[in-house]
Length: 338
Ligand SMILES: *[C@@H]1O[C@H](CO)[C@@H](O)[C@H](O)[C@H]1NC(C)=O
Image (cartoon, rainbow, N blue to C red; front, side, top):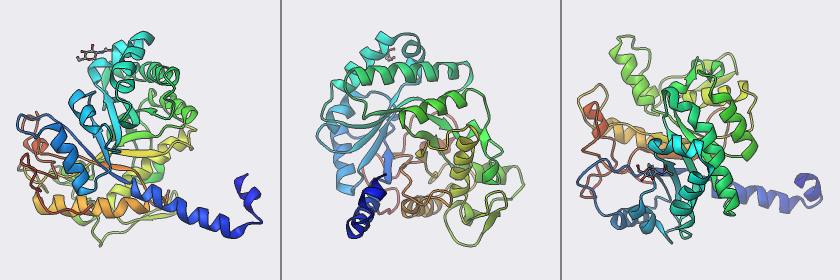
């Protein structure tokens, strides 16, 4: 429609098209601010560090009052998670959802909320709570006049099956299809955590050695053609993201876009590939790469690096404590430019 209206005014249309390409690129990279640690700087210092590095988007994993206060007036775009522990009450009670929105969103009019993530990597029977909680939060935001804030959920890559070649990608479980339909209705993106590192590590540890380090870290040397979609892939990250797009298409929700709500690489921790040099190569490659999107969608792909800091209280494998771009004293873990 807009094209037809402006068709006689070609220079204006061309100009608009040119301008439109820039804001999306500016917002392509954010960083996740995880706080599972006992040695991190104050939230106000953290927000200052984001600003001094030119990082204009952040993800936080719960409604952290300190972070929200520090973010007020900062203009940093925010993904805020509903903690997984809140899912069942928010799913069963519209008034609990309204209370959550009042206390954690409406109370911070100076914060640039972009998305509410209803659950992170939810698994098992709790997956049944995701959609009802999304509906209740969405209604509460609408009632508060905040429909510009989009409601989604953040899924792990395990939510997809048959992800290679990318064109075969589909949702692994049935619960995802109604969630995708809801996203299509509201115009919200699907948030997905995409880690070439874990695919690489699992492949190496199993002795299969199908995935080359260069392909996993945005370095040249490997080219894969997907005969299903005719597209050519030069990095594992693109192949993974495009398998998510394929899954959304198969579910009849082609209009839903993807936001990569986590991606990163460990700088230490004793597992295969975990080194500062590989982490630097991966994360700098990611920053440089996502501006151009993936073979299926050649437009800036909004992506959040995991994570801002090394987190010394993260459970599990030691690598989990070494995903930070920065040390707790705010010195860089390795050099990165945003
Ligand atoms: C969400 O979880 C927090 C922390 O466990 C709790 O204090 C709060 O009451 C919960 N809110 C809802 C609406 O479930």
